[in-house]
Image (cartoon, rainbow, N blue to C red; front, side, top):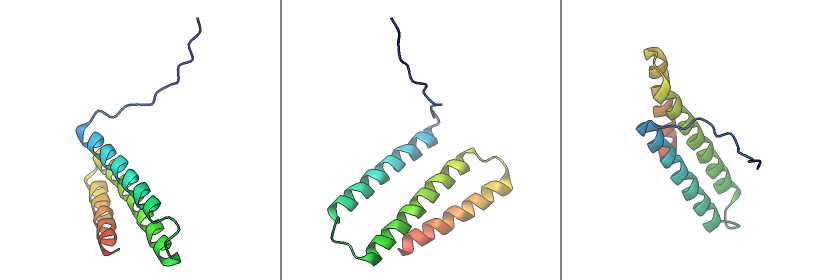
Length: 93
């Protein structure tokens, strides 16, 4: 009997990582629901704003992941500054 198992990548067991992953999934689901609700009714400006927000959201998620693993104080400071900047820009949108 031959089994066709797929290799599974490393699992994140850290509570902060799991919370971040859950938040990411929720945000993707919310963005998809918003997109479905507004499909065909958005202007060029609205689509551009939505695309910019999605780019910021993905950058924010990436930086949060890096921040959770960063150990060098200078690197952490740079990541925290970048995260603040993204959060500020997302708040303006």
